[in-house]
Amino acid sequence: MKGLAGRALRGMAAPADASGAGLGHAAVIMLRKILSPDIVIQPSVPRPFRALSGTTAPTDHPRISPDFMPQLQRDVSLREFNTFGLPATARFVVTIDSEAALLDALAMPELAGLPRLVLGGGSNVVFTRDFDGVVFRMAIRGRERLADDAHARYVRGGAGEVWHDFVDWTLAQDCPGLENLALIPGTLGAAPIQNIGAYGLELAERLAEVRALDTATGTFVTLAREACAFAYRDSLFKREPGRYLIVSVTLRLPQPWQPVTGYADVSHTLAQAGIAHPTARQIFAAVADIRRRKLPDPAELGNAGSFFKNPVVDAATFAALRERCPQAVGYVQPDGAWKVAAGWLIDQCGWRGKSLGRAGVHERQALVLINRGGASGAEIVALAHAVQASVQARFGIALEPEPLML
Image (cartoon, rainbow, N blue to C red):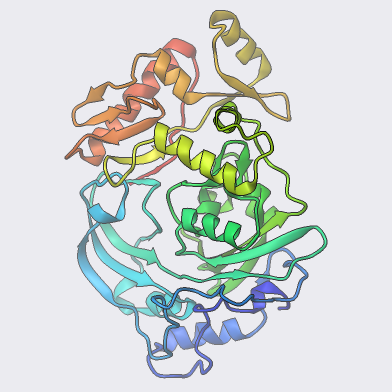
């Protein structure tokens, strides 16, 4: 196909010779499919590909040689691969750092028929038991600025890029527009799955297209934003788990840039600093500061960030809630519904700072469940269920967890 999908990201390209050594027979067949036109779910961004100097992947992430075969590890502890720090063991783990490596891994006979789990930063999963399958650790790296058009700047990155570092890099490339999503844990490839969002911005508002391997057909496909079926913390990828293995993400950053400062925390932090007309870098710093003050660092205290979605209720339900609790925190949506602050609901039920076994609710942010040390996944889930039951009993509102529970 033409456009972005037909060009491999630096460090992601398949070997030029698809019959080269190191690729299994099935992988060779799949690679030949790649060299034919991709399946296009939606038209790709109609724009020539242009790399700017200094925008390639770091030298510690070299291009994979044609004879590369992914290293298969057996009986691997997943404690270091999930931000809760929960104990679990995977039957197999394979690290994927190129499209060719992904194809080779899928062709391995040892992995045939096994359940698959794709892990990026491990910030959206709760392991309650061992995983009797194969874990794909997505480590495809690379960052590239593409050609601008009259209305936007475009950037693309590999699925294994650390999200916060990628946002920081976009600002260094004079491509603002993601600054409100600073310091969200995880990887670029995981961001579309959850449709991450914070402080007035969702990824769906900035996504141009996703390149992924469709395991149902064995071909790489390009899905434009509309095809991803984004909703609040939801997407096609979440509704069809395991089908699409994301390898790169292209983002569209509108120009001229307009600051997003509608959230009280952001505007208050900027005002305290005496900033009336913030730059994107100043918003980035403000958001990072807010998150550091409110949320625990997973490296110090195991957690997955916000554990529950903010529930969306109709106007009548929220009006009844406000009548009963005038201080209720909510945000009106474009369709007239209201998004209720889940942290406020949990706080009103008295859970802030409380524990159940070795799992707890964070002292500064009731929306965050934490591993106080040595907790099991079962303890985290038991606490989540207890919190849900309390909110349901008091307010008649159901809380939905964000992380995947396995």
